[in-house]
Image (tube, rainbow, N blue to C red; front, side, top):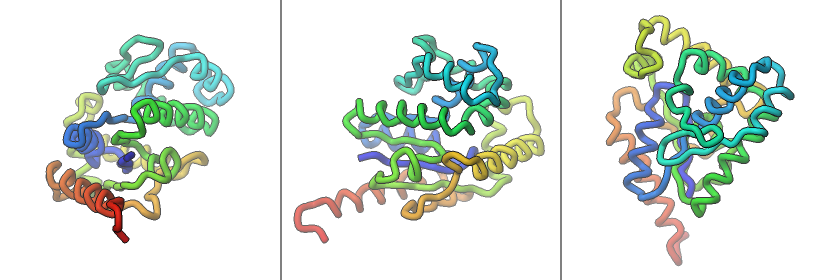
Length: 223
């Protein structure tokens, strides 16, 4: 069973995904980390980030892996580098390239396939593009001020004020929802959860309820 967790930044996707994976005894994948690793590769190579073919060539020549919550580029952990200001400001143009996204999606699908199709996967296009047939899909949302307050506690936003974080989130939301390839949007069959006034355990319990319902539907004789 693939559990798809989608939504914009600051809604709690990563924390919820990790908690779900622990409860279910499966691995989790932060797909955003794979795009950030691709961005590190592009930046290191010196190619123009808006040159799709050049970026694609670099990414295809790289090995991107994700193990135990750590992202690797060509065997080197780049977990810290992927959260740098430079990567944060550069990941949007890199991840917007359709051909680059297609290549990264294949990496993500292979990662789940290697784990027997059992995983909790978070991102922005998991339920719509990466795993459109996932039996459980959740789309997390939250009020802008709540998202900004949560992001303020992240290492990558440590030097930013709330107003600056709100502006960054709005910029990324616009870019993600209007890009040509795999835009951020709620899948038609996804369960939307507003996490604004919910604790992590409450959100996790809600999704676990969806998992239980899906498993019940799979029992012999179920309608």
